[in-house]
Image 1 (tube, each protein chain N blue to C red):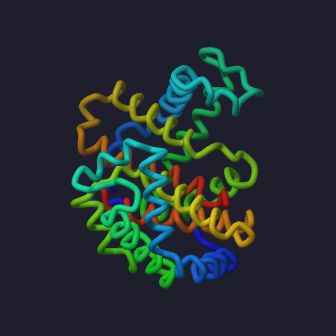
Image 2: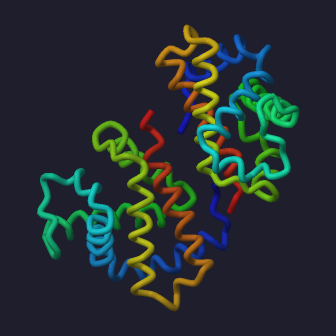
Length: 142
Length: 142
């Protein structure tokens, strides 16, 4: 799946806004993930997953930073996330299904904070973008 | 996901062996899919889906031919299946989840007809190949 020019523009535009609250959105997305999809917690036995936990916030930041990198290099997501792709393939091995769940939670968090910007077109562009990111992160699994 | 040189060799070897019975295997694949996953029948309200139906045989032949085509152009599956990709995107719109189901049934059929052929390594290569085909056929959906 490829992003059209219009879709890339939509992603970049919304990101400019999202970036200003990236850490909070990251933490909120993870919170939503762990609450709606408890099995995802199994990947974090070493974390304090209570609301507002420092580890949650720290990890949320990491996730959003990576997404920011992908936005910056939206024409070469694969190149930009090559190291992360290897990390997920050889060490983390997060089941691919979970990327859809996290992407969904990120969409919800963004929609909640920017309702008027999150038009159906922008929603579709973001969903395609996050699907691309997920594909890149799971592509070296086998 | 990228097919390694080994994967390509394995896939070509499989199709080299089964190429001659491709139509039969295609029909059996569909039959199994309709049985194991009845919801897939909803895409064929215009077909006679009873055992031995000529329409299922004919359609199995088409599906098998496409897989053979993809295997023969394994370095450029997207190019080889470009028209089919358009057809699925613009007309058929088969939900992507069904490609996995069809792929699974195809693996079962190959395994049952050629048990010695489908070693764990060859199985993995064939599965990756079928996933690639599914990805190509759904790439233009949006």
